[in-house]
Length: 256
Image 1: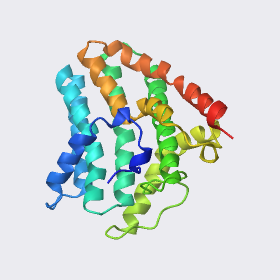
Image 2: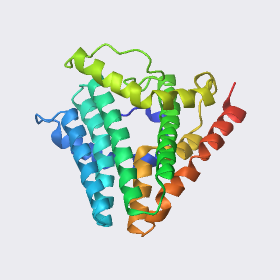
Image 3: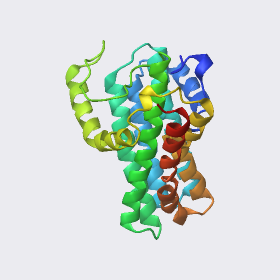
């Protein structure tokens, strides 16, 4: 089951792992493994990738970062196959992602000559990139009645779905808001009327999908194996300028 109706899909460059994720999810459908178990697995994969970065095993690091990205898609696929959507899984996934992003960049800072303040800027840039991509993507899904577990505005604690505890949702939602709240506010301030504009075209969504976490991890993996570790942090700082380019294009040509 896709997050978007077939007629409105775009080429998502950050979602290259989806075919492998579907295979993993299908193999786990009849087992006792839950989507949360898969989320825990991607956390472990990401942490192994971090250790490999620190010790200079860059090919192994690339493998585990990309595998993390695949598992990141597999938990959602498994939830759809088992028909067990949950806010627990949705918020745990997001909280794990942002913490792993910070740890990965710290590992890159550790092995490179980048300054700590540059690492902080790169982290902020990466999160703003991902927030813009998710913002436009959730709006698109809401316009076409696609998957609705994610919401455009995460302002209120959702009511737990069948099979999950409200206490878990409450705790994870608070963590989510504390970690993502300022990034959400910043992107919303930059493009307040995005949900009232014209439908974002496929070509622009494909371009913005380079801000997706899967593509970001792929770029980090490529930079590592190519011996370009010194350029990872500066690249993400500079690429963050494209946030304003993409928002400008949407406002000028597809805004209200």
